Length: 315
Image (tube, rainbow, N blue to C red):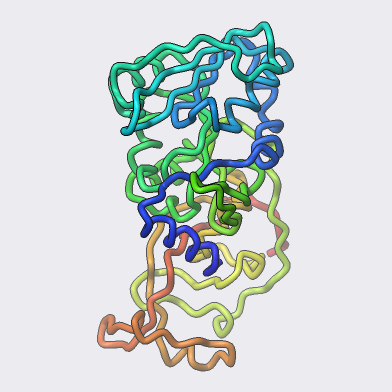
């Protein structure tokens, strides 16, 4: 996980916020939504048709999916930008389509791109990670369906978490892994990247199988939040009905019929309790005092609770 974050941070430091999704990752994910596309307008609003594998994928599968129209726009400050539209006829010729110059630079927030957003049915793209806080709420504002790539840590963003909590958006089926930079360099970000969507997929209702049993020693309570700490998703106790703090990666296994997501927060655990664990690693920068107690702050946790009536175990 650390190496993935380092790759992402290095790119940000170099002011390189473009990561081109590879065709293999697009194929692996989008096939799960094939029944959603018939007679729909697909908009790739962060994609240069000359470079985008999203454009290529939907272009070559235009007839197979029964699409109505494919639209692509992209941001460019160095030269005039354009939109490209395809309505069928020659799916294997990726240059087939109508090119129309845009008045602006192709920013997804520009008035002309918003008009295209209003026209479309489903947005599929990999938006700039640095603008994800603004990008996703824009899609929600215009009530669009979407399948987009983002950093899994975006779940904790103030504008994103309520959408997760209220089951308005969720994660897709796979993890995009290899990305290409504008310089032609390949970076692996599979540990931190996810597909975000509001289209139904069967994976969403798969039950998470659990076997661990609760003990106060194994699952300490937080100092500043009324919940127990769970370090690994696989360690979620099968016999505990109270609130639990779990890693953000729990979202990969989240079934809204099994658990409820309550909150997202970085709580604290009493340091003396943590030190009893032989595998404990102290982080001085995360050690703080809460309620007069020396604690170590965890990374962001999702706070979850078992849905009443869930019969994973016998009481």
